[in-house]
Length: 341
Image (cartoon, rainbow, N blue to C red; front, side, top):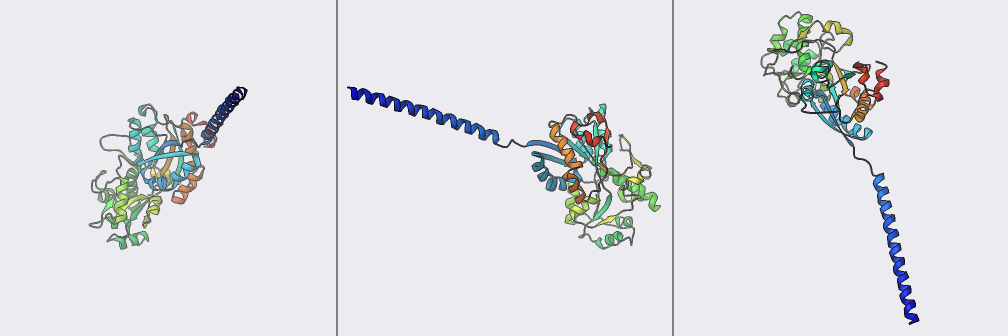
């Protein structure tokens, strides 16, 4: 009996030791799991960025993958005409974090102010550019366009040739479409050709010429379009030849702002008049940005970080970073930049 009792006692202790050991193992495993979970990388913040359609290539192919890694964000971009995108914001069809425009006129007229629900309160300069005439090497008139690029024949004479297919963007949706009209008005005076605008463009929204940005690119590079009005950086991205226009009309020289302002365009059916001005891309964090901290970091990346260097390599012209609007609304992390504006 004593042996039996001793055996039962020993078995009980062994069982107890197993139970205690099991509990210790479970607790240690749980702590290890919790530690691993705390060390797991956090999910990238989804950052919605609206940008001018002309920036689609550089934003999607170059900047997006690099900024995602640099800032630990997941950029969800959308490119289209700046005025069209602004309308989506003020109509509450979208609520992006960052807005990049091809013209400060869009910021001022379509986003800022009580009439626009103060969708934006400030904007910063990003880069400048100039208009060029990009032409297709597959065009039947490629030889004539080449002569125009060399300054041997007037570019407008080539565009006036029968059968030449010429494209541009919608002035009611895209600043480049407005700038095309303003450039032609400047060209009338510069070349002493009073009917140049109507001869080449026809009506402001000539359906034979006006296409969405992405359609113009596809038609030009495929040879369906002979020539289009483009920004210089676009022609460089597309790897197509282009005609450089004089500074007096290409809207690319800030020193000629007063001369550019001598022409203007007012949308048919009403709307705010737009005066000629140097082409200037801008950037802002929208008032109701879902992720303001990451949005501000993105603005810094684009203005003084690697994003700015990428834009210059892509064909944009650098410009001093200046802030406009309500400077009190500029995010704290950007105050140091704003103070120098």
